[in-house]
Length: 214
Image 1 (cartoon, rainbow, N blue to C red):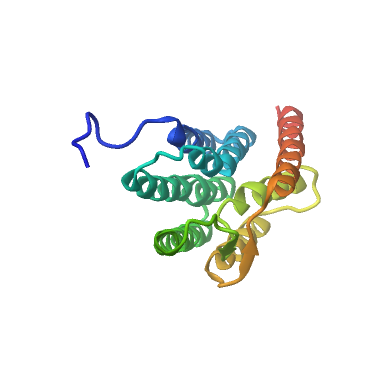
Image 2: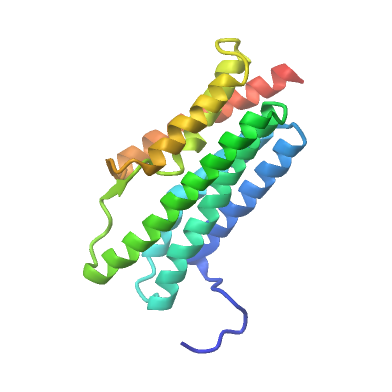
């Protein structure tokens, strides 16, 4: 591999991944400033970026082996920030920095880390064995939290649930799902469209809820 002008790769195949990570960092900043609905909006944007970054990367048929391996690693590192650290910190802050929320949040991030590292190993081995596209995931995808966390926030805002327990239970259930060896089919075009529709509904709900709370 030629010596690069700058460390890393900066072509269009990684733009969405980088964008998603930046949105996740903004989500963290919003949570730290108790702007929870803004935090969720940026978390969902990060999830949207993650939904399509792989598809965009696969359009470049001339990617080198190093670029492909870099793509796998950078995607998982971004996902750890976006769907591990950001949601855990959101829950910690919305639970008023409760110690139990901090402990459960740390365990959630650890579960996401293990899940993503295991995925990287499996994906590299799979790509060595076949050129077919991945059709299934093992374990609940980490992006799941970007869909279900806003639901809990909306339910709390509408007084359907209350307190920190629902948030802690959510992290426990989803974090456990990261580590369970269950087989989940990768969503195709229709599945992605449905997820986008759900995300838009949630985004509108979060926005309206945010206005109500101003």
